[in-house]
Length: 149
Image (tube, rainbow, N blue to C red):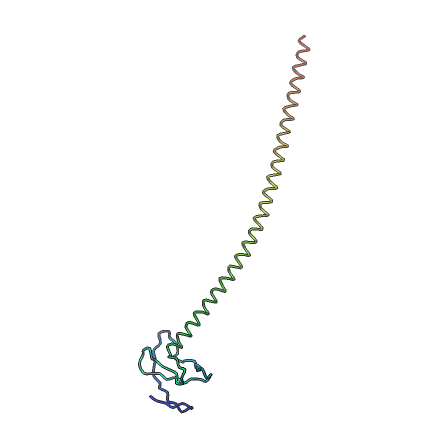
């Protein structure tokens, strides 16, 4: 079926099957003159599904591929942005955990010093008890020696 558009050029309409389930509507593409180029389509599926009318033209499937590639680039950029955001969050978590780890290490060092001091005090108390016990035994021995003489 041939129709005339307002510019007086002929355009052919045909049904096209799309695998992606789109409506078949194609957004207007501007030529290098910055004018909307007319779209012509053919009745059969193939690499020449349609072309633009002025000196600059694109096949319809090329326009679809460009749009699809632009969408893929957008998706990739979105994924990269999300991953960078997650990376920043993880780096912040790592900083918090390192700070907490340093605080815990400081607490462990303080506890180790306290335990060492308590151990030394306990050792000196044991030594003092041994000394007092030996002193008492020496008095008992001295007393026994005085009494037996």
